[in-house]
Image (cartoon, rainbow, N blue to C red):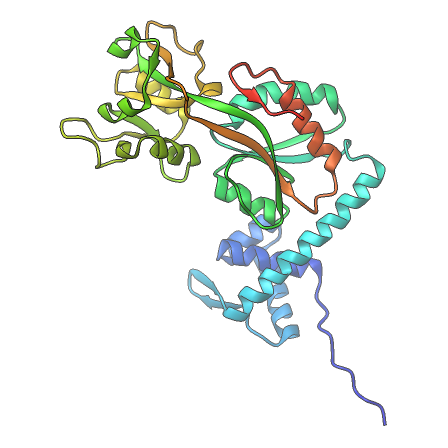
Length: 318
């Protein structure tokens, strides 16, 4: 007598991509847009997969979608499968030449605009046939996209601890103070970080790791904890927005040295001062999946950064 075999559900990589998209967007329409298909096409495929598996992956309600407990487990496994598939694809590409296919590079907002003008020309010399796809975002978003295989390499500020992710330090970057031209500190060569608490310090909004680094340097610079008589901390959406506010005389700010940009305004409007030793600083690094097969591409980016000529940083070469 023959023993029956359990039926294995016939699922496709496309269906796995669809359920990952729905779990991420929490909306079938938005998920369909991100997958470049119509909503009916995606909905039918997701329902087909649920029927094949015999479970409900998503609770559907008007205007919202919730992932069921079993759906969370299936989606997590789907992400792993898709990540491994991307490794296979990258291995095939590396078999030809790891420096001839696009590299998806991400960077935090406070690094990208100031590193890219130096990095791109140098990388163009060292890997002329490797196009660069670039994205700026918050550290948490970049980490998620790296884990999901949507980015290949990201440039972040340490510490950065993610499972399955390797980091390689690039350079140490000191912080500087940006002052309105009429500020009395312009009479001094260097500024003690402890004096920041006396001032109206303009900072980036929540979500930026550089904001957290400033608050580590000056905890009392947080909104609502400043000394009596000092204005509340004003937040900006970008370092460039904050620079304009300093130029207008609204307050002072702390910047990474690569973004200080002495030439952006004449000294008639803003000036830059360094901190007293030991100057506060941050360490910038590359992060990439340990399984990422295009190690030559990662090394090319690292070499380009180290030889890019950033003037105010201390590079961390081999």
